[in-house]
Amino acid sequence: MYYKLAYFPVTLFTSVMGIGGLSIAFKKVSLFSNILFSSFLNISSMIFGILASIIFIVLFILYIIRMFLYIDFFKEDLSHQIKINFLSSIPISMLILISFWSYYVDYISIELKIIFYFTSTLQLVTTLYVISFWLRNSMNNILLSPAWFIPVVGNLIVPLAAHSMDIPKELMLFFFGIGCFFWIILTAIIIQRLIFEANLEQKFIPTLFIFIAPPSIFVVDFYIIFGFYNEFSLIVYFIGLFFILILFSLIKTFFNIGFTLSWWAFTFPLCAFSVASSDLYLLYSNSIIYKLLGIFGLICAFLSVFITFIKTSIAIKNGQIFIMD
Image 1 (cartoon, rainbow, N blue to C red):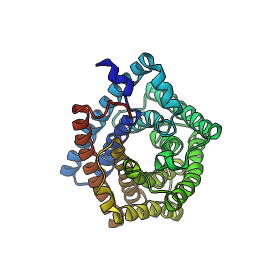
Image 2: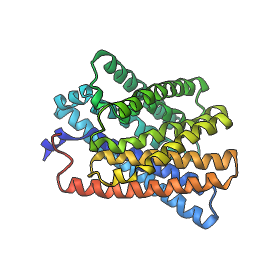
Image 3: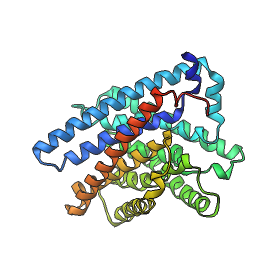
Protein backbone atom coordinates (compact mmCIF):
# COMPACT_ATOMS: atom_id res chain seq x y z
CA MET A 1 0.00 0.00 0.00
CA TYR A 2 2.75 2.45 0.98
CA TYR A 3 4.48 2.07 -2.39
CA LYS A 4 1.61 4.03 -3.98
CA LEU A 5 2.83 7.13 -2.16
CA ALA A 6 5.76 7.16 -4.55
CA TYR A 7 3.29 8.21 -7.25
CA PHE A 8 1.55 10.86 -5.17
CA PRO A 9 0.66 13.64 -7.66
CA VAL A 10 1.49 17.11 -6.37
CA THR A 11 -1.32 18.36 -8.63
CA LEU A 12 -3.75 17.09 -5.97
CA PHE A 13 -3.08 20.28 -4.01
CA THR A 14 -4.99 22.20 -6.68
CA SER A 15 -8.10 20.60 -5.20
CA VAL A 16 -7.48 22.62 -2.03
CA MET A 17 -7.18 25.76 -4.14
CA GLY A 18 -10.54 25.05 -5.77
CA ILE A 19 -12.45 24.06 -2.63
CA GLY A 20 -10.83 26.79 -0.52
CA GLY A 21 -11.54 29.36 -3.22
CA LEU A 22 -15.17 28.24 -3.28
CA SER A 23 -15.45 28.84 0.47
CA ILE A 24 -14.30 32.45 -0.03
CA ALA A 25 -16.67 32.93 -2.98
CA PHE A 26 -19.61 31.74 -0.83
CA LYS A 27 -18.58 34.17 1.91
CA LYS A 28 -18.40 37.13 -0.50
CA VAL A 29 -21.81 36.45 -2.06
CA SER A 30 -23.32 36.08 1.43
CA LEU A 31 -22.44 39.72 2.13
CA PHE A 32 -25.06 41.02 -0.32
CA SER A 33 -27.75 38.36 0.16
CA ASN A 34 -30.89 38.54 2.31
CA ILE A 35 -30.64 37.30 5.90
CA LEU A 36 -32.06 33.81 5.29
CA PHE A 37 -30.00 33.12 2.15
CA SER A 38 -26.95 34.75 3.73
CA SER A 39 -27.06 32.23 6.59
CA PHE A 40 -27.15 29.36 4.09
CA LEU A 41 -24.18 30.81 2.18
CA ASN A 42 -22.20 31.36 5.38
CA ILE A 43 -22.78 27.76 6.44
CA SER A 44 -21.75 26.59 2.96
CA SER A 45 -18.63 28.73 3.18
CA MET A 46 -17.71 27.22 6.53
CA ILE A 47 -18.34 23.65 5.32
CA PHE A 48 -16.16 24.04 2.22
CA GLY A 49 -13.48 25.93 4.18
CA ILE A 50 -13.26 23.15 6.77
CA LEU A 51 -13.28 20.50 4.03
CA ALA A 52 -10.43 22.30 2.21
CA SER A 53 -8.47 22.52 5.48
CA ILE A 54 -8.88 18.80 6.21
CA ILE A 55 -7.93 17.81 2.67
CA PHE A 56 -4.86 20.04 2.82
CA ILE A 57 -3.69 18.54 6.12
CA VAL A 58 -4.12 14.98 4.79
CA LEU A 59 -2.36 15.76 1.50
CA PHE A 60 0.44 17.67 3.20
CA ILE A 61 1.14 14.82 5.64
CA LEU A 62 1.15 12.29 2.80
CA TYR A 63 3.48 14.47 0.74
CA ILE A 64 5.91 14.91 3.64
CA ILE A 65 5.94 11.14 4.23
CA ARG A 66 6.58 10.64 0.52
CA MET A 67 9.51 13.06 0.65
CA PHE A 68 11.24 10.89 3.24
CA LEU A 69 10.28 7.47 1.91
CA TYR A 70 10.77 8.20 -1.79
CA ILE A 71 13.25 11.04 -2.03
CA ASP A 72 14.04 10.26 -5.68
CA PHE A 73 10.41 10.81 -6.67
CA PHE A 74 10.39 14.10 -4.77
CA LYS A 75 13.53 15.14 -6.64
CA GLU A 76 11.72 14.33 -9.86
CA ASP A 77 9.02 16.85 -8.90
CA LEU A 78 11.78 19.43 -8.50
CA SER A 79 13.20 18.80 -11.96
CA HIS A 80 10.16 17.93 -14.06
CA GLN A 81 9.11 20.68 -16.48
CA ILE A 82 5.39 20.15 -15.76
CA LYS A 83 5.31 18.99 -12.14
CA ILE A 84 7.56 21.79 -10.94
CA ASN A 85 4.85 24.33 -11.77
CA PHE A 86 2.47 22.69 -9.31
CA LEU A 87 4.82 22.89 -6.32
CA SER A 88 3.50 26.39 -5.64
CA SER A 89 0.01 24.96 -5.24
CA ILE A 90 1.16 23.98 -1.73
CA PRO A 91 1.89 27.52 -0.38
CA ILE A 92 -0.96 28.93 -2.49
CA SER A 93 -3.37 26.48 -0.84
CA MET A 94 -2.10 27.60 2.56
CA LEU A 95 -2.57 31.27 1.64
CA ILE A 96 -6.13 30.62 0.47
CA LEU A 97 -6.91 28.84 3.73
CA ILE A 98 -5.42 31.76 5.70
CA SER A 99 -7.67 34.12 3.74
CA PHE A 100 -10.70 31.95 4.54
CA TRP A 101 -10.02 31.59 8.26
CA SER A 102 -9.33 35.30 8.68
CA TYR A 103 -13.04 35.87 7.92
CA TYR A 104 -14.10 33.67 10.81
CA VAL A 105 -11.71 34.45 13.67
CA ASP A 106 -12.67 37.15 16.17
CA TYR A 107 -9.25 38.73 15.90
CA ILE A 108 -6.09 38.08 13.93
CA SER A 109 -3.82 36.22 16.32
CA ILE A 110 -0.05 36.36 16.31
CA GLU A 111 -0.08 32.67 15.40
CA LEU A 112 -2.03 33.32 12.21
CA LYS A 113 0.37 36.12 11.30
CA ILE A 114 3.35 33.81 11.85
CA ILE A 115 1.74 31.22 9.57
CA PHE A 116 1.12 33.97 7.00
CA TYR A 117 4.76 35.13 7.02
CA PHE A 118 6.01 31.54 6.85
CA THR A 119 3.71 30.73 3.93
CA SER A 120 4.59 33.93 2.08
CA THR A 121 8.27 33.07 2.47
CA LEU A 122 7.60 29.57 1.17
CA GLN A 123 5.81 31.08 -1.83
CA LEU A 124 8.79 33.35 -2.51
CA VAL A 125 11.27 30.49 -2.21
CA THR A 126 9.20 28.35 -4.57
CA THR A 127 8.97 31.22 -7.06
CA LEU A 128 12.73 31.78 -6.97
CA TYR A 129 13.40 28.07 -7.43
CA VAL A 130 11.01 27.69 -10.37
CA ILE A 131 12.27 30.78 -12.20
CA SER A 132 15.87 29.67 -11.61
CA PHE A 133 14.93 26.28 -13.04
CA TRP A 134 13.46 27.94 -16.14
CA LEU A 135 16.63 29.98 -16.64
CA ARG A 136 19.06 27.11 -16.05
CA ASN A 137 17.38 24.60 -18.33
CA SER A 138 16.23 24.47 -21.91
CA MET A 139 12.42 24.36 -21.77
CA ASN A 140 10.39 22.27 -24.22
CA ASN A 141 7.96 24.69 -25.87
CA ILE A 142 5.40 21.95 -26.50
CA LEU A 143 4.99 21.52 -22.72
CA LEU A 144 4.20 25.20 -22.19
CA SER A 145 0.65 25.70 -20.88
CA PRO A 146 -1.29 28.12 -18.65
CA ALA A 147 -0.21 25.94 -15.70
CA TRP A 148 3.01 27.96 -15.84
CA PHE A 149 1.05 30.82 -14.30
CA ILE A 150 0.77 28.95 -10.99
CA PRO A 151 4.28 29.37 -9.49
CA VAL A 152 4.70 33.06 -10.32
CA VAL A 153 1.22 34.55 -10.54
CA GLY A 154 0.54 32.72 -7.28
CA ASN A 155 2.30 35.66 -5.65
CA LEU A 156 -0.93 37.63 -6.21
CA ILE A 157 -2.54 35.41 -3.56
CA VAL A 158 -0.30 36.90 -0.84
CA PRO A 159 -2.19 40.25 -0.63
CA LEU A 160 -5.46 38.29 -0.77
CA ALA A 161 -4.41 36.35 2.33
CA ALA A 162 -3.38 39.59 4.07
CA HIS A 163 -6.73 41.34 3.54
CA SER A 164 -7.55 41.69 7.25
CA MET A 165 -4.04 41.69 8.71
CA ASP A 166 -1.80 44.57 9.61
CA ILE A 167 0.79 43.65 6.99
CA PRO A 168 3.28 46.25 5.68
CA LYS A 169 2.09 47.69 2.39
CA GLU A 170 5.59 47.31 0.93
CA LEU A 171 5.44 43.54 1.46
CA MET A 172 2.11 43.26 -0.35
CA LEU A 173 3.40 45.46 -3.18
CA PHE A 174 6.48 43.24 -3.48
CA PHE A 175 4.44 40.10 -4.16
CA PHE A 176 1.85 42.03 -6.15
CA GLY A 177 4.56 43.39 -8.45
CA ILE A 178 6.09 39.95 -9.03
CA GLY A 179 2.71 38.47 -9.89
CA CYS A 180 1.74 41.29 -12.26
CA PHE A 181 5.08 41.28 -14.09
CA PHE A 182 5.08 37.56 -14.82
CA TRP A 183 1.35 37.53 -15.55
CA ILE A 184 1.95 39.97 -18.44
CA ILE A 185 5.08 38.18 -19.68
CA LEU A 186 3.62 34.68 -19.52
CA THR A 187 0.32 35.70 -21.08
CA ALA A 188 2.17 36.88 -24.19
CA ILE A 189 4.38 33.77 -24.32
CA ILE A 190 1.57 31.28 -23.74
CA ILE A 191 -0.85 32.87 -26.22
CA GLN A 192 1.93 32.89 -28.83
CA ARG A 193 2.44 29.16 -28.17
CA LEU A 194 -1.32 28.42 -28.34
CA ILE A 195 -1.75 30.21 -31.66
CA PHE A 196 1.40 29.24 -33.55
CA GLU A 197 2.41 25.87 -32.08
CA ALA A 198 0.71 22.48 -31.83
CA ASN A 199 -2.54 22.28 -29.89
CA LEU A 200 -2.45 21.52 -26.18
CA GLU A 201 -2.70 17.87 -25.19
CA GLN A 202 -6.23 17.04 -24.04
CA LYS A 203 -5.18 16.70 -20.40
CA PHE A 204 -3.87 20.30 -20.43
CA ILE A 205 -6.93 21.88 -22.06
CA PRO A 206 -8.66 22.64 -18.71
CA THR A 207 -5.67 24.82 -17.76
CA LEU A 208 -6.98 27.42 -20.23
CA PHE A 209 -9.31 28.51 -17.41
CA ILE A 210 -6.25 29.72 -15.50
CA PHE A 211 -6.27 32.78 -17.78
CA ILE A 212 -9.28 33.98 -15.75
CA ALA A 213 -7.49 33.92 -12.40
CA PRO A 214 -4.78 36.64 -12.65
CA PRO A 215 -7.05 39.55 -13.70
CA SER A 216 -9.67 38.48 -11.15
CA ILE A 217 -7.20 38.31 -8.27
CA PHE A 218 -5.62 41.58 -9.44
CA VAL A 219 -8.95 43.36 -8.94
CA VAL A 220 -9.31 42.04 -5.37
CA ASP A 221 -5.66 42.84 -4.54
CA PHE A 222 -5.99 46.37 -5.92
CA TYR A 223 -8.58 47.28 -3.32
CA ILE A 224 -6.75 45.49 -0.50
CA ILE A 225 -3.52 47.37 -1.21
CA PHE A 226 -4.77 50.79 -2.32
CA GLY A 227 -8.17 50.97 -0.63
CA PHE A 228 -10.20 51.92 -3.70
CA TYR A 229 -11.27 50.87 -7.17
CA ASN A 230 -10.99 52.92 -10.35
CA GLU A 231 -11.40 52.61 -14.10
CA PHE A 232 -8.08 50.79 -14.41
CA SER A 233 -9.39 48.09 -12.04
CA LEU A 234 -12.45 47.72 -14.24
CA ILE A 235 -10.33 47.40 -17.38
CA VAL A 236 -8.43 44.51 -15.80
CA TYR A 237 -11.67 42.94 -14.54
CA PHE A 238 -13.14 43.07 -18.04
CA ILE A 239 -10.06 41.25 -19.34
CA GLY A 240 -11.00 38.38 -17.03
CA LEU A 241 -14.61 38.59 -18.21
CA PHE A 242 -13.42 38.50 -21.83
CA PHE A 243 -11.48 35.28 -21.18
CA ILE A 244 -14.64 33.76 -19.69
CA LEU A 245 -16.52 34.62 -22.88
CA ILE A 246 -13.75 33.09 -24.99
CA LEU A 247 -13.76 29.88 -22.97
CA PHE A 248 -17.54 29.56 -23.07
CA SER A 249 -17.34 29.91 -26.85
CA LEU A 250 -15.09 26.83 -26.74
CA ILE A 251 -17.39 24.90 -24.43
CA LYS A 252 -17.75 21.93 -26.81
CA THR A 253 -14.00 21.39 -26.56
CA PHE A 254 -14.22 20.94 -22.78
CA PHE A 255 -17.09 18.45 -23.00
CA ASN A 256 -14.97 16.17 -25.17
CA ILE A 257 -12.04 15.65 -22.77
CA GLY A 258 -11.66 12.77 -20.37
CA PHE A 259 -11.13 13.24 -16.67
CA THR A 260 -7.67 14.05 -15.32
CA LEU A 261 -6.57 15.99 -12.25
CA SER A 262 -6.18 19.01 -14.54
CA TRP A 263 -9.96 19.38 -14.23
CA TRP A 264 -9.25 21.23 -10.97
CA ALA A 265 -8.02 24.06 -13.20
CA PHE A 266 -11.70 24.81 -13.87
CA THR A 267 -12.39 25.58 -10.23
CA PHE A 268 -10.21 28.25 -8.62
CA PRO A 269 -10.31 30.72 -11.56
CA LEU A 270 -14.11 30.69 -11.48
CA CYS A 271 -14.02 31.22 -7.71
CA ALA A 272 -11.64 34.16 -8.17
CA PHE A 273 -13.93 35.72 -10.77
CA SER A 274 -16.92 35.38 -8.44
CA VAL A 275 -14.98 37.04 -5.60
CA ALA A 276 -13.83 39.90 -7.86
CA SER A 277 -17.38 40.48 -9.16
CA SER A 278 -18.80 40.44 -5.63
CA ASP A 279 -16.19 42.92 -4.42
CA LEU A 280 -16.95 45.29 -7.29
CA TYR A 281 -20.64 45.15 -6.40
CA LEU A 282 -20.05 45.68 -2.67
CA LEU A 283 -17.23 48.20 -2.74
CA TYR A 284 -17.28 50.01 -6.07
CA SER A 285 -20.74 50.05 -7.57
CA ASN A 286 -24.20 48.75 -6.71
CA SER A 287 -24.70 47.82 -10.34
CA ILE A 288 -26.84 44.70 -10.65
CA ILE A 289 -24.46 43.46 -13.37
CA TYR A 290 -21.63 42.81 -10.90
CA LYS A 291 -24.07 41.14 -8.51
CA LEU A 292 -25.33 38.80 -11.21
CA LEU A 293 -21.80 38.04 -12.40
CA GLY A 294 -20.77 37.25 -8.83
CA ILE A 295 -23.66 34.81 -8.44
CA PHE A 296 -23.03 33.38 -11.91
CA GLY A 297 -19.37 32.81 -11.05
CA LEU A 298 -20.32 31.17 -7.75
CA ILE A 299 -22.77 28.78 -9.44
CA CYS A 300 -20.21 27.81 -12.09
CA ALA A 301 -17.50 27.42 -9.44
CA PHE A 302 -19.74 25.23 -7.26
CA LEU A 303 -20.70 22.97 -10.16
CA SER A 304 -17.08 22.62 -11.29
CA VAL A 305 -15.88 21.84 -7.74
CA PHE A 306 -18.72 19.38 -7.11
CA ILE A 307 -18.27 17.48 -10.39
CA THR A 308 -14.47 17.44 -10.20
CA PHE A 309 -14.52 16.35 -6.54
CA ILE A 310 -16.81 13.42 -7.39
CA LYS A 311 -14.70 12.47 -10.42
CA THR A 312 -11.50 12.66 -8.34
CA SER A 313 -12.97 10.54 -5.54
CA ILE A 314 -14.07 7.87 -8.03
CA ALA A 315 -10.65 7.92 -9.71
CA ILE A 316 -8.89 7.49 -6.34
CA LYS A 317 -11.24 4.64 -5.41
CA ASN A 318 -10.54 2.93 -8.74
CA GLY A 319 -6.78 3.29 -8.30
CA GLN A 320 -6.37 5.71 -11.19
CA ILE A 321 -4.56 8.52 -9.37
CA PHE A 322 -1.62 7.08 -7.41
CA ILE A 323 0.00 5.53 -10.48
CA MET A 324 3.08 6.16 -12.59
CA ASP A 325 2.63 8.97 -15.11
